[in-house]
Image (cartoon, rainbow, N blue to C red):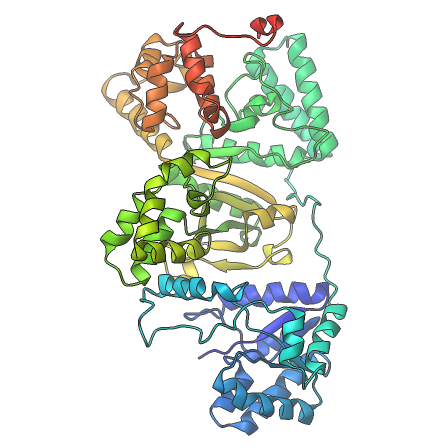
Length: 600
């Protein structure tokens, strides 16, 4: 059995105690729900303001069970824990009979123990008109139908975010209960430090005094292995510049952390991707063998990766054989401490197509009804739905989607069932359906995780609750805003296939085969790409991409880069991908906005 309790941080001490309570409720008290006991509550009570909660609170549950003495005792115990001015007796009025019956008794309890009273509204949606969408969401989450009489639901339409004026009117006979909300607001002063980077300390050998010195040593050693002992002048200039920027921005330890992870993977026989994204423009990353593409040879910009005029954390994507991703996370935990490393939670939202199907189901219609409506929606654009709103409203951003939704609009105009389904679906679209573990993101902290954010266990597969992965309770953007090191450990099945294929070739045909020595101008490979035979090839296997490859007919490594760069929403919206393919294969003559542009 468990009860509800509302805790508010009055100051930074209270905020950190909230982190402890929220984390320990999952890590130590979880039983169907995260829970804390009286002893834990008392241990971490400093700096917190508590309210007795809603109808699910300990005090109110006693009142609903006719135990007025028990309710008084529980309110008194909470007051003993939090202090005379830090325990507020909470009253609510959503027009529910239980609240009408118990509110006078709550006021009486507050008078007896000398506690201030606060009025709140149990807000589960923003506007009163959102009550139906919220009701539908509850049905989606519980697998119920909206017509079911005995399902979990919130009675009435009052659980919305009411204005100060509405609350003042509702509690006009007891004005101090609204005044006390302002008292809490005046007292609450929590300052969460944002924008300051908090990187883990990388352990360096004793002969080096700083992480910057160690990074420079590794980089120049790596440069000699890449370009020879007599480094070309342009290499010295580029590497020196990058090292200066990295040191100036305070990111030396970041490069060392990534270098160490990649090195461990390669030393352990775990296949690592050659590099992806803007990090390929870094000569330092190339020297450290974090990436395998020479940025000078291909004229790649370092500033696209790390710009001294725009301070932001570097972001190097690390791709591993997916079978060993967990091993890499374990290595990081052993290196920096198990209480310093966690995966990051993610929240999935209901997309428009699924919103239509979900709406039809909770309204009690057969699957075919929702499926028929969903199939009238515009086709996906770069894997993304056109929002339902813009299937019915013109906008420049979704002009193509609006045009493609003509049949959907016609159906909704004449079919009451379709109209109702779409109405409910609009309310569901964008709401959070469930939480999960981010496919790549991992956070590594200099101090234990619970110094910065709340954590929990997230059961997956057949793992027991106490064996489940540790994840943050804040999603990725919140973690980054705290200045914590977020890294991407992406497990790619494509690398699994490459690893297994290489092993098969070595066993059956060539014991010395090394895929990393295949030249980047291999004609057979370009012929295969030109035929669009790329199922299973990372980023090149979707049907539209294979069609673009057939149209482009790549004949150089730079052509492959161009294909990947052009297959993006911006260039595709201007038809640049098709124009480029036509220009390359002389199907169309290019037009230049200026004569000097020909050289580009």
